[in-house]
Length: 298
Image (tube, rainbow, N blue to C red; front, side):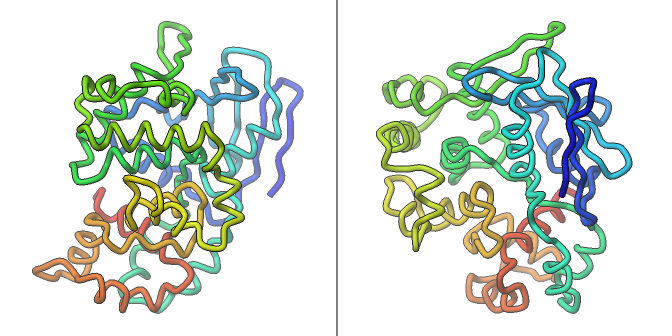
């Protein structure tokens, strides 16, 4: 996969064959209260932080190329931007292997045909991935998005351009200095507030990082050792942040609902039943899960 810097300051990233911009937009538009990106006329606007500076990027699609513009300033370090976008859209993954693996699977094969080119939409920042997963524990997705919006708008960084507001996720340094009541005022439970602040401190004090997880022999075990992180949260973070294709959040309610819907069962599959189905997806459990989640947006 190649990228080029154009004379006008834009960036062009060639895409792998198995990539659907429209399917990625479906995922990114799934919540009306999403605060960390905006989509207008099929352009994606996202605020990222590069070398401690707020950088607004505008992503467009044409002829199987992502076109990246910088509406508010001179282009920053392009390598950093390319790395972020590759991680956000999982562009380094060879999806042809996944499609081949599930080509004869009665559950996944129809979904692969329907959503061909859908890629894992990642969460490149570990702190965001962990705390977003914590916010979503045992509540509905709509309220989870509301909590995230409150957290971002109270403690994140903002850029205003042409009267539009763009937000970046709060840094762990900011959250580590909060008191539990600061988050309880946003309707976090006491425990969730403690967990989020605790994760921030783990990162700020150097005990937790994306690099350390990548080099760990058992990153799931390392995550589960942290307060507030259970197997589901660990698998979600391995799937969405470290982009591990074999991560499998088998306890996920959305996954269970999607399988029940696709198989036209009257009750949700058990964990053992899901694991039995997943024998056909071995090594690709995360992508199977993501495609099954997509089937719930119909």
